[in-house]
Amino acid sequence: MIQKSLSIKASMPTYDEVVETVVELFKKAETELSDDVVRALKRAYEEEDNEIAKMNLEAILKNIEIAKTKKIPMCQDTGLPIVFVELGKELCLDFDLVKAIKEGVVRATKEVPLRPNAVHPITRENTGNNIGMHMPQINVDLVDGDELKITVMPKGAGSENCSALKMMLPSDVDKIKRFVVEVVKNAGGKPCPPIFVGVGIGSTFEGCAKLAKKALLRNVNDMNEFELEILNAVNGLGIGAMGLGGRITALAVLIEYGHCHTASLPIAVNIQCWANRRASAVLR
Amino acid sequence: MEISTPVSSDVVRKLRVGEIVYISGEIITARDKAHVRALEFIKSGKKLPISFNNAVIYHCGPLVQKVGKDWIVISAGPTTSARMNRATKELLNYVDSIVIVGKGGMDISEEIKGKGVYLAYTGGAGALAANAIKRVKEVHWLDLGMPEAIWVFEVEMFGPCIVAIDSYGNSLYDEVKRRVEENFRKMMESDKAD
Image (cartoon, rainbow over all chains, first blue to last red; front, side):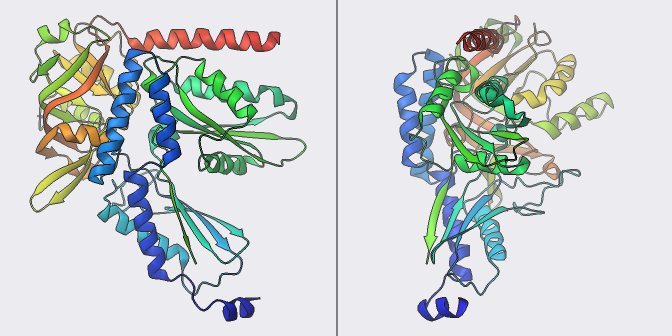
């Protein structure tokens, strides 16, 4: 198989290409929000009638423009480097992919620049370059084809700290909505609303958390009936932008599912601030 | 309205919840570690590198870059203030008056009475905030790391900030929280009825 793909593909992504791509992706994600996220924020500004909430949304929209024009990070919490890799099965890489991604993060920290956020969990010592034990966090999926897709998602702590996971009972299916709404309620203004709510239902303990995070990569304006039902409930809470009251608390509820054990129902809610920063590139 | 630093207790007492404020003058960043160390200093009688009394304390871990000898502020929005709840309650015992700027609110409506106000700045609006920061005047305790150090900024019309907790103990967050709990309770009851 490897022989075959080698003979078909004359060129493969190189170490330097991956490093360069990671730097560029962090630059893009930190300074510019994707169209779907901007559209959702603008719609919230139009629909909001609470004066203070509207003022906050206006500040957010102004902030996005400044960051994009000046090419500077929109938020000082440039997040932790989370990287998703989709590795085509037909690819044959002759270099250390993890090392290339790490080098990309170190360079991005200097060049974008990113705030050094990675610290030792106990001593709290800052490594100064955003890499460390299991950092950057690299998630690899093997997929069909001969492409290498890299997605970066710098994730801030304000919203991450408000996330929650629960091993529910299999008979609690009708309580899923309540759990999600409750997590948002308890978060209040802390995660910088209007938020995006990533939900993972099923899989395993760690699997549902991964699904919840992955859900945040989806187009935020494409929701199904159940997602819209929960979004509606969440917005009925009245937390509003920055937790100072208002109609719009969340911009989207996005759910991913995984089959789970007949005896369990894991559910994870990953909260994302209004700055749902992500950027992708495909290397061939 | 525009307020200039140092902010007198008279001005602090005039501010009421819901009002919009812009700050000009000097603001001091402090977050988790700086609060802990400041309290250690105060309790052991050591002099702080910069006084917290009559100051504007900004809950912020800025993104700064050293260019030559100067520090340039790239992005400097507020961080979640609730993490500083405990330290702030203690700190309030040692100051006459204080203005706190942050995001997400605090659980200090009792302790802040007669002493200070809490202003909410739009969370995540780091580029907008950096626009109002004219220069870095001083930096202290850099050994705590870039986000946790104390940065002294000169600002011009820093805002809009919303008075979210005033010196009379009125809190927009407490009001919203009450309403949110009520909405949640009603929602869950009607869900059960379905």
